[in-house]
Length: 113
Image 1 (cartoon, rainbow, N blue to C red):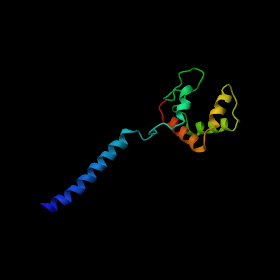
Image 2: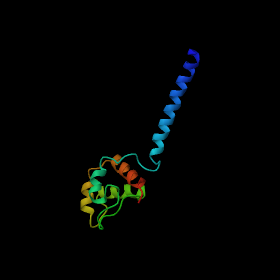
Image 3: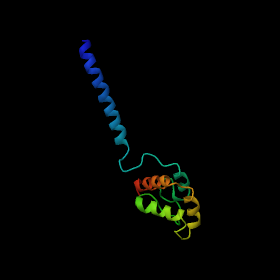
Image 4: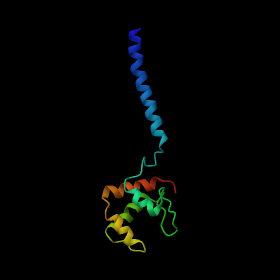
């Protein structure tokens, strides 16, 4: 009896762990970031908590192309992007690291428009 239990118990634990991991992974769509980056709270004040802006003069970020978002943030950061909101966006982008920009771009690109 002991030999059977010692062979069944470890395999049961691993099967259960695999099932739990599989369920946890499948609960989050693969294309969507697991959680918002820390700086997304600043973005949300104008662009909405879900990347859909409540204001008609601010663009939606949800579903934008990741490369476009990263490029735009870098352009604001280096004061190369002009426009009506450039002063605001340059101020926000000036505090972002390259990792912050990449994380924000990936996060907003992963959201449904």
